[in-house]
Image 1 (cartoon, one colour):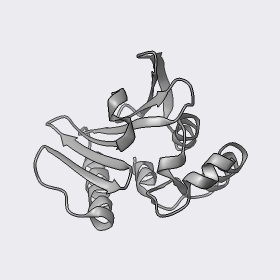
Image 2 (cartoon, rainbow, N blue to C red):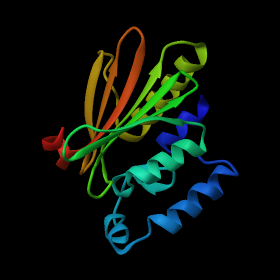
Image 3 (cartoon, one colour):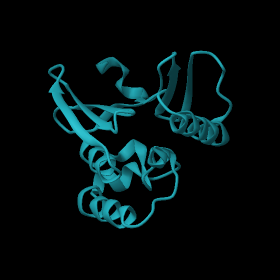
Length: 172
């Protein structure tokens, strides 16, 4: 369960580090990627979150233990990829059909164990340290960089962290 912290910039451990870095070098480092990665950014498996695509997110998630459970076309423009981790967490990626660039990524953690509460607390602390305090409400939104919003929602059964690219709201 603690591997979920990797989504929020926790250091990678071997052999995951090597596998994910090798995948990034082989599949991400294009001219477009180089332009995208200039400036400050939110870290996602040691890559700029704003520049990664559905394939990289899926590969990184599978490397730490997620399993793809569904891939579905939800509109002419969007594909939803759903991955599960031990019946305790779900990762949903909405990405464009044409380019594979993600527009939304949602990590949902079920409140089904003490571990889940500890991970949610650690993730929340990391977000607050990096981007500012979250409210204690059931729903909270914040802009975390020039092109990325974070939405936190929680209810009695789960907590969700949703990243949405600001220029993609019209697709949702």
